[in-house]
Amino acid sequence: MIVGVETTPCPKCDRELPVTAVKCRCGWLAAKADPARVECEYTLGCPDNAILKEKTVTGWIKICEKHSMQLAQQKADAACQKLGLKTPAEQRAWVLANLKNKPLRERIIQREPGEDWGEEDAT
Image (cartoon, rainbow, N blue to C red; front, top):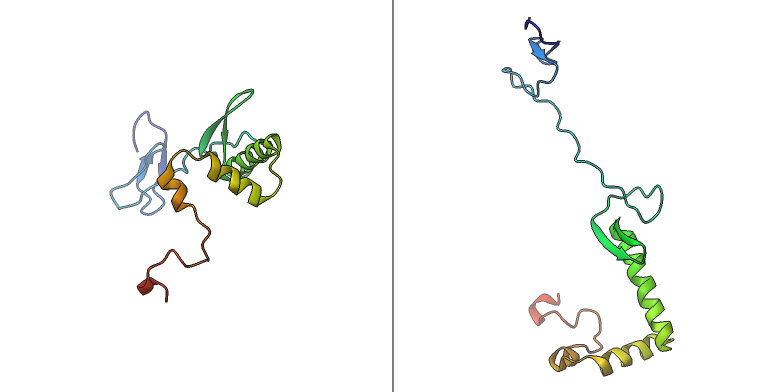
């Protein structure tokens, strides 16, 4: 018994421990608490943890990966609509025409799946 301290028995050996104890001499360790959950602020009740901050017209919000991709797609769709690009072919032609980095432009070519692997990795 510890005088002046609220105690509880160790779950493993029944030794008296302070309520705030996280370990005992017998080897018992308290379960680690889960890291604090960071709520996704994009929609109410999103089950995923926020992993990044995104700037919006109303300020900064914390969002999850799924909503980050959704927001990026909305921005891309709005930009394509503003430019009058309706098909993926038109979008691709616009990107290639407006890309300033020539070496990067030459690397953006149409490839078949698996073509970017070496001969030894193709199997």
